[in-house]
Length: 343
Image: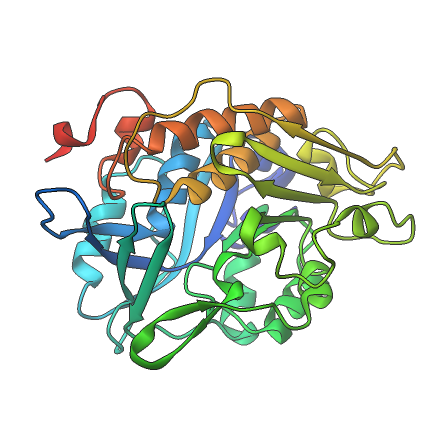
C-alpha cells in the first residue's frame, strides 16, 4: 500500500517491505472488568478485558509477517497498567496509544445461572474523530474494529473511514446494540441506521441476540444476496456452543487478501460451522472477541472461510477456560491449561 515510505526515507522498494511486514490496526477500548460471580465462593474478581481479548487472539493467530497496532485511547488512571499488559503480548506495537485525562472504562459484569449477563459501564474514554484517526489508519494494511464501549466512533467517522481506507475492515458491532441507562447499566437496543453502519465495513460480526436487533427480522440473506450491494462482503453471527453462521455477498472471495483488490463476482452463499469440541465450563466473557479476532487473522493469512471460522470456534472455546485477558495469549498457545495457573 506504500505506507512504510513515510517512516523510512531509505526504503527503496515499498511493496517489497510490505510483503515482509504488514500492519493490522486495532480500534476498540481497553476495559477493567469486575466479575460478580454466582459460585459458592462468590468473591468478585477484577481483571483486564475489552479489546485485550482480541489483541491476544490476534497475536496467537496472525502470521509472523503481521504486526498488531492498537489504536487506543487510555484513561489516565489506568494507563500505566494498560501499557504493562500490552507489553506482555507479542507482536504489539504501542506507538499509537494515546492517554486521555478521563477515567478509563470499567465494566461490572454479573452472570445469572441461566447464562444471561448484565453490564454496568463507568469511565469516560472518548471516541475518535476522523481528524484524529486518519493519520493513524494511513499506516495500516487492514483494520480490526471492535465496538467494546459502542462509543469508539460515530457513524460519520465510520463513513469517512470507509471512503478513505482501501484495505479490508472487520467490525464486531457488539456494543452498538447497547444503550446506557441510569447508573451506567447497558440495555440491549435496536441499532439505528444499521444499514448505513453495515455499509462501512467489509466484514460485520454480531452474536445471535444482536442479529435480531438490526431490523430485518433475523433474515440476513436479503442483505447478502442483493447483487447490487457492495458491503459488507461477509456477515458472521456467533452462536455460542453451536458454532457460527455466515453469509457472503457476491463480491466475497475466500481469501481475505483479495479484499484489498477489486472483488471478483462469485456466488453468494451462507452456512454454519459447528464447534468440533465443546468448551469446558468456565467464563464466556471475551469469547466473541477471541472469535472475531481469530477469524479475521486467519482470513488475512489466506485460510478458506470455513477453515478460518473453525479455528475461531476452537480458540473461542479455549477462552472459556480463562477468566480475564491477562495471560490469555499463553493460554491460547497452550502454555497455560486453566485460569488458576495464571494467578
